[in-house]
Length: 85
Image (cartoon, rainbow, N blue to C red):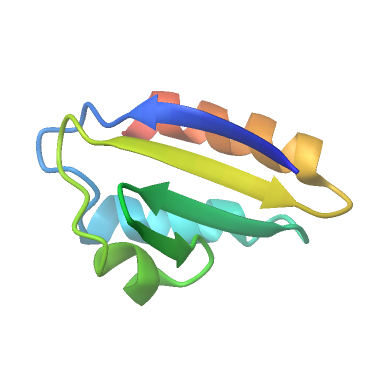
């Protein structure tokens, strides 16, 4: 399992538009990808799971990937977070 943490800098947090983009990015990988924030977690490939977490600006999230392409998934998602959130 690989993981990284990131502090959300987007003024609106993870709202509908970036959540949809995140799901599309996560779907590129076969690994199981989980997003965690505080005591909540959700499947990064399911938009309602992400939206239901209510992630705001300044929250720290941890992205975990487990599977055959976990290294590529973590690298791709780390770039996604830096460029979009």
